[in-house]
Every structure is written in structure tokens, then in C-alpha cells.
Length: 323
Image (cartoon, rainbow, N blue to C red; front, top):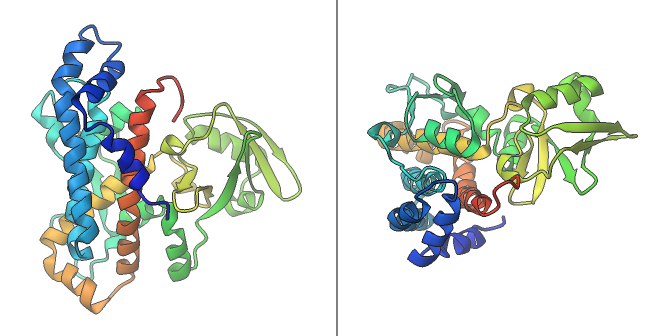
């Protein structure tokens, strides 16, 4: 696992009012009052990052049973810092302060976390963050199952394979020439090469400009550099540094992995706080397959959330460069 020390090292460089103000001034360069806004927001920006780090630090030493609450609220603080780089008036209304997602209040008997789902609301942090940072709109009413969200986290693919015998993705080699991937994915998706390109272009924020079929591989050329922040449906494994492409069509819709982490942490924090009996039994009786997925996810999210937030901040310094 590539640890999050490097990401936190970068985020800690903003623990300086002078540096943060200069950074925000660049972020706000299209606003007429950039100097004033950057001065007003520099300390809030620092405190969001600092408080987020403290939550994550506490999660490192806390038992798994308590980590979801710490990591969720730590992620919330980091997301607010990200929003502040593009929305200098945040929070403009109280509506954006809600979580922006809901879950079933009372769990069914024989509850399984992997089968549980959450629903995106019209207002709140998630829809506001999604629109401002990823230009993702109209998420209201969308429902997401926890198992499907975990499949969007490539570090968990081996856990799925060991427990369910599912191969969820094919590795992709990314180079200056393009993206090389096994042609077996065509059989897996039951699709022709041309239909595959059209299918990809329907779901990407970038375009496949050519697809050359070789003996056992496909060489995809895209119109920009593939980078991990918004590479969906390609998935980036921070542990190995490898990209992969899903083998299920339902995983191809553009949905940045960072949003999956938010939804999973939100629901885990709710279960841990309000389904105490089920949560306690999970860690002591091991009744379902949920625990290996949850603990592996918690281990992974500690690294990937600060990694993605650091990329968001770096992107603001390179406007016009895809990230």
C-alpha cells in the first residue's frame, strides 16, 4: 500500500495563512474580488484541512468499530476544503450543510451491509461537491448499493475474488502510446470492438480516438492524459499504481471513486451509531461476509481520501490541465 504520508505532506503545506491566501487567490482569479475572497477564506481553508487530518489521525489508532464515524467526519472536512477552492461563498445557504444523502432508518431482519443502499438528496454536501468539483449534476434520487460501491474501489477486487470468485476488472497498461488492455474484456462484456468504443465514449468524460486490436490486446488512444482523479470508468489502484477497467457494464457510468468513499463512509457511520447490536455482533460473531469487505475498505479509504483531495487541490494550480 502506498501510504498517505505524501498526501498529508502536501496538504500540510497549506498550514500557512500566507501560502493558503496565495493559493486561493489563484483559484479565484476569475472573480473580481479575488484578493478579498482569498483573505476571507484562508483560515477556514486551513482549519478544514487541519480538522480533517485530526479525525484521520484518531482513526489510525481507534478500533475498527469506531473508525467509520471518525473517517466520515474527517472526509467531510477535507471535502469542504476542496469546495472552497471553487466556491468562495461556501456555505452560502444552510441547505449545503446537510449530508446530501439518506439511508433506510430501520434495517430489515437478516440485514446485510453489502445489500443496503443509500439515496442521494437534492441538497447537501454530496450533490454540491459533485457539481462543483466534477460537474456531475442531477444525482438527486439516485440509489446506490453498498456492494456496487465497493466494486468501484479496486483495492477491494481481490477480496471479492477470494470470497465471491468474481473477476471484477482487467488491468490496463497506461503509457504515452495509449491504454493497453486484454481483448478478453470484449467477451466478458459480450460486445464487438466497435460497439465497445462507442460504449466507452458514451460513459467517458474524454474520448477514445482509436482502438487497434492486436493478437491478445486492445490499444486504446484517448484525447487526453488519463489521470486518476476523474478516470472513471477506469479505476486506479493506489496500492499497486495500476489502472483497470470493470467487467460489468453497470460499473461503466462516470462516477468518481471519491464519491463512492463518501457514500460508503456515510452509511457505515450511520450503521455504527444507530445499529449498535448488529454492528457489535458483526465484530464478535462474524455472521456474514460483510466484515472482510468493511475492514479492507476502512484500511483503504484512510489512504485514498487524502490522496484524492490532494489531487483536487493540485488541479486548481493547473487549470486547463485534466486531472
